[in-house]
Image 1 (spheres, rainbow, N blue to C red):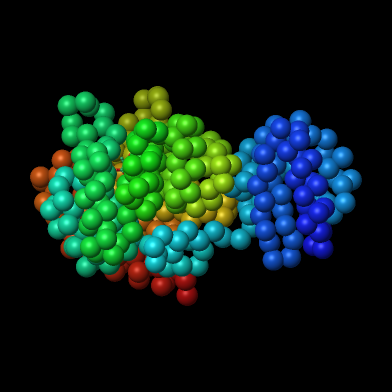
Image 2: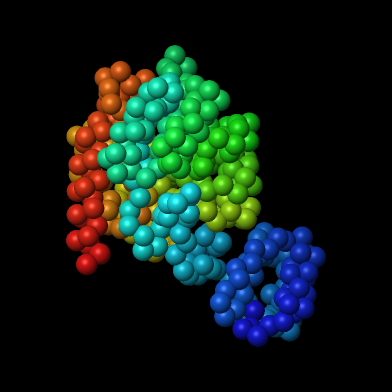
Length: 336
Ligand code: PEP
Ligand code: MN
């Protein structure tokens, strides 16, 4: 819209778009407002839109993801969770905790230690996506209650995965950030249900998803009015072929500067799943910060040998303290 466009002119444009069965998303700017059109653009005559009073320009964004593209939102988005701010020029945020919540006592013990080590947010899975039905599947609602209790005790915002559309309400009731896991990146209904809670969403990249595919699914979250999205690179793996990686997944650090260039959202990495190996987590964390990650998600266990899931990649709390200290040094070096 033109900088001086009146509310009446704006209303007319919105009404015109909606009358064609399309939805809108409005970005209110300091100088001018931008209206995003959601849906099949063939339903509307762009020349007609251009002719309406108050319209400055009608632009078609060439990439399949639009609402999450820099062409639509040019300024960095900072996601605020409790007192923690992630994105933009804020220093890196560390999200840490066990892969799975195993008991209230376990989460409390580990939570206290990750906080002492310098982590700002607490993670822990209550609904675990597992390959085998014979593995630990998570404590479900009981785990969510422990997460809320420990998060409140330690004054740490919490993150946990929503594995199914059916659990969205209960997870949103107990946790501050909803995590959509790599295996669910393509689950449109889950994305939509999570978006509608208006809670911040930690959205993981699927392990064989191309970047434009990943962003096209992030678009679905934004299209439901939720722009509190944390993008998370968590490692990729080839779909077929004979190439056998030496590690569980390959942390794709190209994705960090690329996603930052394409979108305004905070980008974090998960070197725990990205490597699957405790000894590689610190170097890949530092590399993530060096290439511009806004934060890290790290799995920590104080008794890794007893961990009910992902034992091989769990750092001990003292290693997390070292990770945070060394990442701080890298951050200060690159931001000078
Ligand atoms: C997790 O964070 O515990 C997890 C299962 O992650 P991903 O979806 O990346 O495998
Ligand atoms: Mn895990």
